[in-house]
Image 1 (cartoon, rainbow, N blue to C red):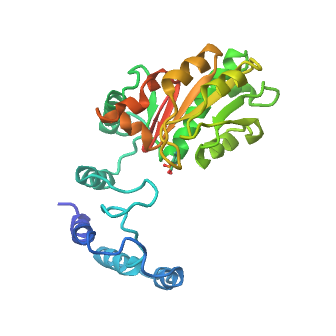
Image 2 (cartoon, rainbow, N blue to C red):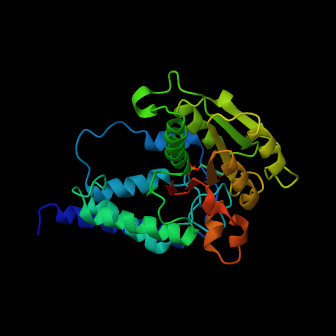
Length: 297
Ligand SMILES: Cc1ncc(COP(=O)(O)O)c(C=O)c1O
């Protein structure tokens, strides 16, 4: 047995006990934090240790110091935002990925990780009803999914207009017009800023009384000019979870040669449910889809 093994066992045993205890008490413990930031800082922000600390003690100290500063987001009583709720098998697999310590960037660095990734990409497209020929990437969240999808859109739209953005950058490129409803999430605008597309090029179009983009308004706007255009549609808007009418809107956008990107952070998962799938009817005709924990373009 390797010399380091006992340290791993004691640290992982301590983490296992603490994790199980956290999960088992979720139904009774506070969903909100119960201590304030000053208390957390006083506990956590200690002077750097001058000597090594035994691994199980690191875990015990961490668990004690964060007590009261964790939200109950892993439990069934948490309704803040759209976070939390990992499945038991996913949590356990996540522990293994830490223990395996693979660099999943390349096949050569971790052949198994590469094949796991390509497999879940295929499964994801199957469960979400997206075209199997779409490329995909697993990224950090819907924010980076937007960035990745919009980078693909930027490339495709500009190359259609004879502009090689990878070589020439955006200096002198034709501006990309962005059409969206007012119900978009701020992460979309962040992606627009990061990619140099410029928020001044976003035009907000009206929504109906259910927060869905109005097809006539989209058509009218598209018909005004024929430069490169990106259309953002919502699968679950941020206020009431409304779904744009993909069946009507995507064919209109395509008629004008626009790239259609779908923000499906949480709403794209309706496609996985036979009862809710009607909400995303026609969504497979878009060009890119961002959802939480992954993006497909
Ligand atoms: C509609 C929508 N889009 C994008 C995001 C950004 O997702 P993430 O926090 O995973 O980057 C969210 C987050 O709640 C969202 O609700």
